[in-house]
Image (cartoon, rainbow, N blue to C red; front, side, top):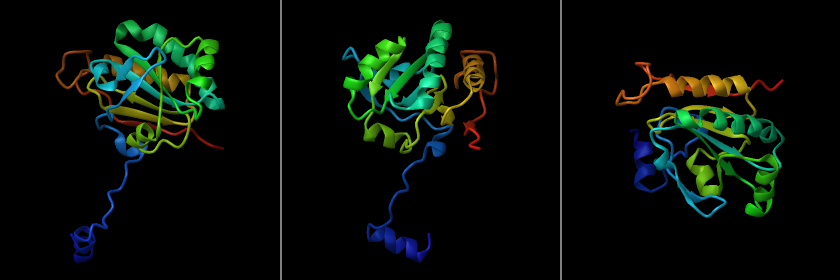
Amino acid sequence: MTSCAFLLCAAGLWAQVPPTPTSLVQKPAPAFVRNDLAGKKIILENYRGKVVLLDFWATWCGPCKIEIPWFIDLQRKNKDRGFEVLGVAMDDNGWDDVKPFLAEMQVNYRVVIGDSATSDAYGGVDSLPTTFLIDRDGKIAAIHIGVSSRKDFEDGIEELLEAKTATGDIGNRANGLPALFMVPNRH
């Protein structure tokens, strides 16, 4: 540590750099506890052992409306394989906006209302949609910022479903999934 950094640290001026979404790849997914529409607690740690698609979205977000039907289908097709979709709605009006949207879209997975603490824990989510693929060990394997292709999600989920856990008890791949970071082309 340089003497300048030491002085800043000693003076309490050395700020810890907050995480960004991309800095979370291959790290444990930040824990959170939020209530779903039925008032039941969703504790992310309880999903350990499953592959989780954690989607930050909002009812007003056009690209989110493209991806949500895919997630409904992925949940339906893969729920019996150890896969779960969890939605984190970032709407300012909370359930007043989200509840009718969920009914209209016939969403078949659990959704919570996010807040700034949840967003900050995931690197200060400031683009919607932002979607995290979490492996069976609870580590973030991939991040999709902005709308991605359905095939990208399907391929990533399939690889994670086939991958072994750190204890080697699930799947048939010895080395697991390499970290992926997906940002769509913006032309």
